[in-house]
Length: 244
Length: 250
Image (cartoon, rainbow over all chains, first blue to last red; front, side, top):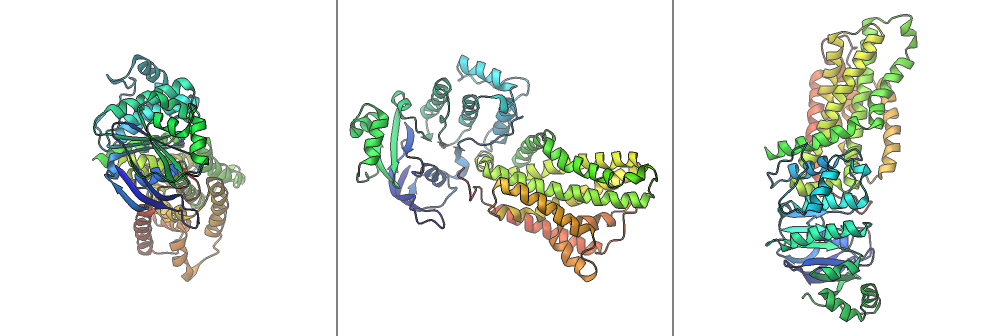
C-alpha cells in the first residue's frame, strides 16, 4: 500500500493534521506509526480504513469489508464476560463461520499453552473484573482471528503491563507472518520495537519525518535510546522524507 | 441470513446489558410503577372503575415507550462515542445489525417491563386481567419502533454523553407534561402527533381495542401515516448517521 500526498484537516479547524503525507506500508513487516500525541496517528488510521475521506492518493487500499480496525479503549459493558466478547466478535464477523461454544473456552491449534490457559481463565470472567492487559490481549487475540487484508491496531499496548504487552505483540507478530495481510499499529512504547521486524513511520507536523527499520531509526536519531532518537528526529527541523 | 445472525448476536449483548442495568430497569419500570402507585394511593381504599385504571395505565405505558425510545437512542450515542459502533461496523461489514440489535433489545426489554407494570398495578388496584396485560403489551409492541425511529434525529446533535443524560431527563418530563395535560387539542392534534412520539403513542393506545382507554383525537389512518413517516424517516436517517463522534476522538 502506498500513501501519496495525503492532506487532511478537520472541519472548522485551521490546523492541517496531515500535510502532504507520503509513505509505504510493507506487508511482510509490522508497520508501526509513532509520533507525538495529536500528531495525526488516529486520523491517519481513520483515513486508511475509509472512515474519513482525505485529499491525496492511497494505492492498494482494500475495501472496508477487508479491514479490521481495533481502537483504543472501546467501552464494553462491565458485566460482559470473556466468552461473550469472543462470541460477539467471531459470530458477527461477516466473513467467518467460526462457532463459539458457551461452555468451552475458544482455543485454536496456533495458540501457545500460555494463551490457552489465559483464555480458559478469562472465559467466565466479567470484563469489568479483567485487568487492562487482559482486556487488550483478549480483544487483540479475537481481532487477529478475523480474516482480513488490512489490520489496524490503534495503540494496542498502551497502559498495558510488560507481560501482557509481550503477549499482545507476539499475537500481532504471528498475524504479520501470515501471507497476504498488512498490519499497521501505533505505539508510544518504542523500546519494544527492537524485538520485532518493524517498518517504522514517524509522523510529525502532518508529514513522515522518518520511515525505515528500527535500526535505521536509531542511527538517524543518533542514539541507542529510542526515546532520545525520537526526540532528536521530531524536535530538529527536518525535511520530510519521500515515501520509501 | 448473515445479517440476521449478526443482529441476533448484538441483540443478545444489548438485551443482557439492559436487564443488568439497574438504571435502565429503574427508569423504565421502577419510575412509572412508583409514580403510578404514589399518585393513586387513594385507589387502595376506593378501588377505581376499570376505565379509570386502564386510562391511567396507557399513560404510563406511553411513558415507558417514550423513555425506552430515548434510552435506545442514548445507547446508540454511547456506542458511537465509545468507539463501539465504528469498530463493530468493520467486524460485521455493515452498520445495520448493530442498530437493529439495539432497537430489538429495547423492544424486548420494554415488552417485559410493560407486562410487569400492567400485571403488578392490575393486581394492586383490582383490575388484573389477561385483556389489560395484552392491551398494554400491544400498545408497547405497536409503538416502540416507530417512536424510537422518530427520535433518531437526536443522533445528529453534537451532544456529549453527560449532556445527553440531562437533556433526556428534562425532555422526558417536558414531553410527558404536554402530552397528558391537553395542552394541545382540536386541529393542532395532528401536527402535535407528528412532532411528538409520546402523543402519537398515547393516541394509538386509545385506538387499540380490548379495553376502554379513552377517546382518541387523531384518526387511526392519520396515525398510521405518521407511523410510516417515522419508520421511513428514521431508517433513512440512521443510514446517514456518522460512525465517529464529532466531539470525542475514538
